[in-house]
Length: 203
Image 1 (cartoon, rainbow, N blue to C red):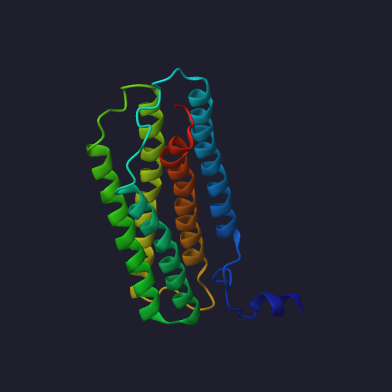
Image 2 (image 1 turned 90 degrees about the vertical axis):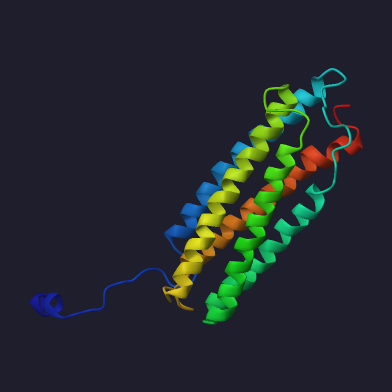
């Protein structure tokens, strides 16, 4: 009987079905560790700013242009990414490509605008502790945006080559979850560096 069981051909497992699997847990652990890193940086800003002398805040009224439209663009990209993920889940390749491609373009525009914003700042990373915190935090976020763009480009190509199916798409779900994380982190960064000065913090 044992020999019959061993000799009987069976289909090999090809991975988890749906969005549940070890890959999802791995991305969750990555997000938790990266969120802690951003938490430390933002805590440093509030800690130093709360005890700093007047004049520490180099931009008491940070310009909302182009930062605010750029923020809205990044937030909108999360909805476009969700649209693309649903396309994969439904087996609609056109919807998936529009969603993933659109998210990539929106993320690339966000990155380009962020680089432009850096270039017009009147201070550099070594000007003061405020400048160092600003460029370190936004620069780290930019690194995550670039990683997200690489992930989106890879998923776009895999959809073109029909690597996913409505049953097996954990890679897409994990990649889109990472992009949502990148968007959520920027909300905290934007609130900290662009909105709290208007509320009187560190003036």
